[in-house]
Image (cartoon, rainbow, N blue to C red; front, side, top):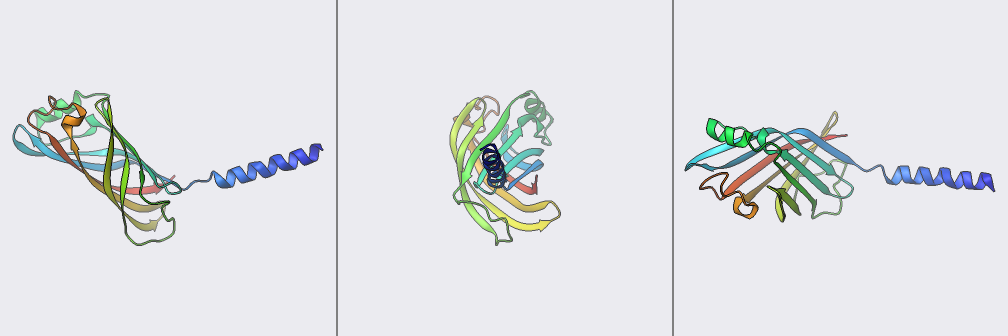
Length: 177
C-alpha cells in the first residue's frame, strides 16, 4: 500500500513538472519610445528599462515601465518626469492567438487585449503587435508594438499641459528565461 502511494506521488510530481514547464520569455532592458507634444513642440521620450514577460503557452504578455526612466532632450520635461517617482505604466493582456509557436515561424501579426494601468487608473486596452522569430543563443524573437494613450482617460491632463495623446512604440528582443 505504501509503495503504491509513493508510486502515485512520484508520477504526480513528474506530470506536474511536465505540464508546468511553460515556455516563458522576458526582457528587462527593453526599449520604448513615446512621442507627443510638450508646450506646443514635438518631443520624444525614450527608456531602456521596459520589462516584458511573454508566456508562449498561454499567449499572454505583461509590460512594465517605471515612468521616471523616460528621458527627452527637454530639461524641464525631464524634471517633470523625474518627479513622477513611483509612477508606473503596466499592461497585462492576451494575444488573440491560442499560443505562440516555439519553433521557427513566419512573422506573426496579432491583436493584444488586456488592461492598462497608469496614474492609479486601470482601463481596458488593446494594441497590435508583430512577433518575428530568430533563435540565436538565448534570444528567441523580436516583439514590437504600437499604441496611442489618451492621457485624459488616465487623468494626466495637468502633468503634460496641452497634450492629450501620446504615441508609443516598443521593440523588444525576447530572451528565454
